[in-house]
Image (cartoon, rainbow, N blue to C red; front, side, top):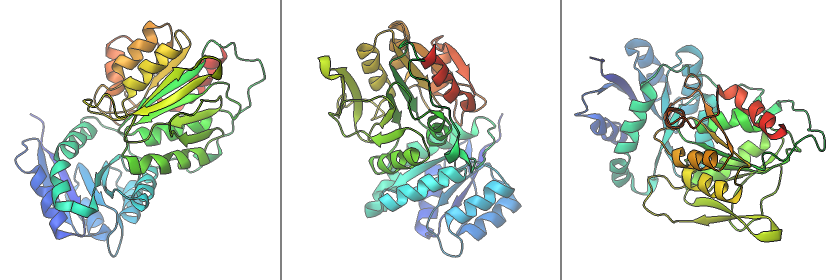
Length: 351
């Protein structure tokens, strides 16, 4: 029988330490290894107790979560889940943490922490279990990722076999997307549609950050825009994104709360199914790291319509859930490590 996953809880608030600890109590496969009140305390306890995973607050005295995370990734790399506030500042700090090597985050609403803490239980437990289910080497984003050199495509060098790229991701996705999108050349001939499971407050800053490190433009979709080549459109964190042909005017993005009964909003499958309908036989579906199976029916629709599909391999996934569902269903034309997927997208577009 596998030993329980040992969790170190790091937060300067005694209330939050107790609250997070109480969420883990009674779970046979999870055990609280200790509590730390700041970054310095966390580093000492990681050295002494060697936990399997850490939950880390960002704003703390003495040493904040980002400084502690940087040291942890350099000296004792292990999975760290950030506890992030649902604010613009919190979003930017969380994205910094993901760049430094954090595996994921749990958003908290600071306006009502006591109520919110109960709502995050299932999310926290599922992420701890998913992240620790496999041995993944956690490391910071490569510092030079923002200066990927890409060759511009020659005019007419693509054959219009692929007319749109649809990419879905979840846990580990921000880092994965930062390894894929910056490799796309500035004159990429088709639009890219992105769905990353993220809160509403996070998708705007993430789109801006991804755009700054890429040759193509990345924007958070606002709805009703006509999609253009060489632009990536990221779904907002609280809406389903779909695309629809509009005659001679091209293809328009729509945002909606419907269907309202899905676990994920935005949904990768909802987006991909609309892409398959709008671009039968000429869509490229890409599924990246993430928990669960969102994207399975969407990749199936793209495949059945005559399009092409790519899945991230298990070795480079933070969580091999969404790609596994696609691979196990026999729907992946190609399975590749994350660092080869950007090049494969270009190759498929040029065939």
